[in-house]
Image (cartoon, rainbow, N blue to C red; front, side):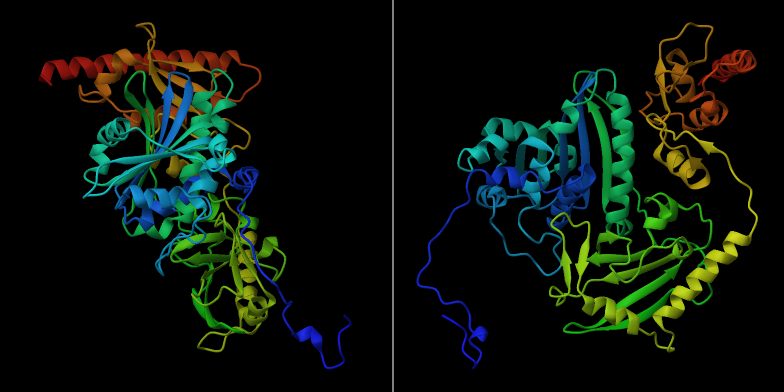
Length: 512
């Protein structure tokens, strides 16, 4: 029927009934193809831990010799009973979130997990209930969204195994048949874990930095289930994208008010970094030119790290400019958050408002951009000593050492991190270089001498290892092995061997 001149286009389309159309089993492929990266998927699980009021969470890689077999995320939050766990594992079910919750859509646990693994198991316990568990697999979803009940004995055993963390309540999320793990070539597990842990540490340190600053303890660990020992442990520290010590321009940060249509005034906190900063919050979160622009937060969780959101294109002379924006509660019509919580789509109402934003002194947002450009040009004109690029320290080095190296020196791109390990070596060797495997190997016969006779952990003897790293890192990534360099390694080895024997004799003389 043609529209009338009176404007029939105004009316809603009429309906004559309705029917329920449950999702087809093929929805499983859509669920597992949300475009999650490995780090973003794990961050989504940590969000659930924070919502459950956990103050401690651990990302735990389980390995069996050279195979990585599973990944666990453990927390000491409130836990879930059987009914709550059923709700959490139901595909498409949305629960009621508190106003400060990090969860939004009710799909994160399932979509994040099944984007990485073909099997998701959740085991949980509250203070008042017994451990319960549910298992969801890609095959189960295809089979009519089937969710399996975990054996009670296994659930209890798993909770008991990690009782030192979970205590009386908490949750274990377990990934099995992880796609990334199944594609690791033989002999490459150490390199994979070193790189994966470094990237995961940076991602979690950045996107959860406000929670880490307030006391959330978040660790990344690797455990060999055959040797029954922990082989690596990292304490994630805040990576604050606004964590400079002195601003790059006087009078900053400045707070601007942007009058967003339909939302009201939105606060913009504008920052200018000091030029050529080596701090982690500036250089370690990705290419500097990509990290200029808006940093959107939702309930203190970073959900977009940089980008001008269609306000302007990124430019090198604005690389010092960053703006923190806390998303308003009533802004869903203007700010649309991705399911993965790694980006925000904005309408022109926001960018138009930014153009009009001013601070209490009347400074315009354009003035901020001009100040940021001036700080960049002034910094570029200053001469600076060019520090050498180094291979990044990896497994076996204390996380504090790794962070200090990343902050003080440039990291060579395309190189596997350099690991350091205690192994069996001839008695006349203190160390050996495995140049093909990118490793410094230390004689484990001397390990007790550097740990006061106690059993050392994965990152023990930090001073000794760091000094060796500084001496030896430039011996890797080379083509031709020069005789002069080989001779230097030989006499360093001989002198260090003499020093460790001298240290051992001294300990024996004074009786400790």
